[in-house]
Amino acid sequence: MNFVELLLVLATVLNVGNSNIITVKNDTGQIQTVKLACINLPNATKKPDNLAATEKLNQLLPAGSPVVIRRVTEDKGDRITGEIFVDNQSVNLRLVAEGNAVIDQDTIYYCSETKTQYLIAQANAQNKRLGIWQQINPDTTKKIPR
Image (cartoon, rainbow, N blue to C red; front, side, top):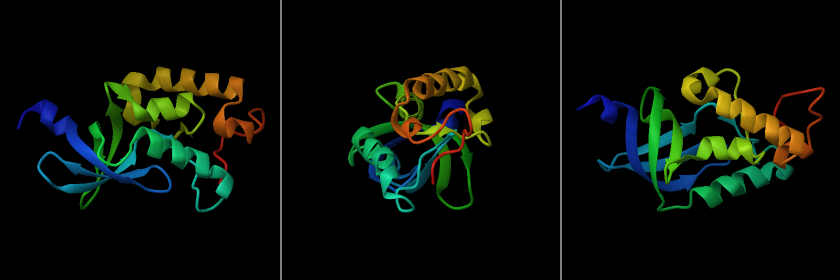
């Protein structure tokens, strides 16, 4: 197994959870749970208004979609944390840019190569009051609505 194979996982989306969790089948047939790295999505089960972010994730990652996952960590078992790519574009970054997710300050270091892109994307979404930024007063909080 070479270095690239350790970092990248080729997979097919099976389903999207209600937050930043998806289930995939990797190219060896193993089913894995993937937490989207470096971002937080609102949890739709806690507040129905937060459903838009999960709907957007379902739209970007419908069942059967081929994806590439840049693995950043692996928990015990089959759960990994990673950045999801479709057609060479980061789904994680797109969710932030469109105001459907915010940067996770606790894990952004996993995306150190693209941290500036995430910061700029979030600032633009915030300035344009996109998605969840319609619900948040950017001057008083940077927390995601729950």
